[in-house]
Image (cartoon, rainbow, N blue to C red):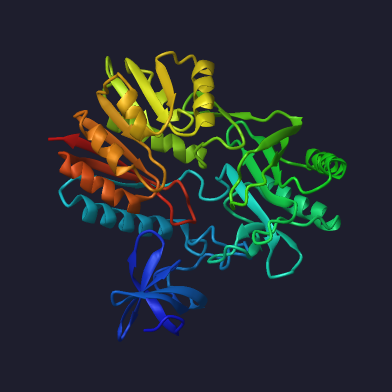
Length: 457
């Protein structure tokens, strides 16, 4: 096959998490964003070492398992979902099979597979969304939503998204209407000109509080921007949300990167944070701090981590990549002390604040790169918990923590395919997988969390 060639095929020999193989008479083509049994029209985007990669252009025929009707009109174009057309039971069965197969191929030895636990909520579970301003086509009208699948520029309006509570859709819909009526330009990624960049919405599942942050450049005159922001804030506060509006914020970022960089945040109304309850503890959530997107699913995840950690009485537990310190505080209930290490300083400050609020005194948080902190910290762990970002653990850091020789390592992975390299290094260091389980933290998407218990020989 040649790059640019178009062909059709049926998805088979499915691979985790969001890829499938279109089988042709002359070989196989790896096609992203596929569902088993679908017949698709695709275009070849890359050919390497006898294997071609392709991108779906059109769904010609749904698979036999696609019997669910999604209410979201962007289901085939938005980059956020994949399994909207599958009944949740079918989705769970597919993910369970794929995750077990991936783990067994990676571990290559016997271990206890405990299956995949369903999310308590299959819809409306997300606690955070970052919407982008842009247009759906070149020079088209202002849009606000998610990036179109496979595009860095085109935006798909997603004000009927099923992954979020209706409060998110209401905030998106009315914010877009407000700025369209006033012809306010969005920030163009190529020219670096324009004002509107992102709309960040966070909503507590249990305490039901809202934080809404408009992210812009500084490319409007100060007086005009002030009047505009006051009017937008008043609109937001008047909307009939089911949750309580805890804060309305304005963040300025002039960075050319396509990401939110907090250069200055102003509170237009209320506060710049809210609280959420999880597993009997209370946590402060700020606009940019990390917190699990599925609160009910997170409780199941942390319960499984606690089972794998086991007896901690009189022991020191390291929680590496600790975020806002949720796991560290839960484990600290019975441990002698816990030490959390997190690169993002804001998350560490919030973790310390959370620990003080919950009366957890035997928990210490360190801001810094795990690779460097392991050289500087004097304490020695008895148990290590790893909950790294999607790319996994730095190999050098992994080899350093192996030298501690702890009897147990609990590995939490939000991207199981990134786990493969780390498991190889841990196996070389004498660690073997004893038990593993999955938690479906991200229904309707390919994402799933894996938890592994590794013990040293």
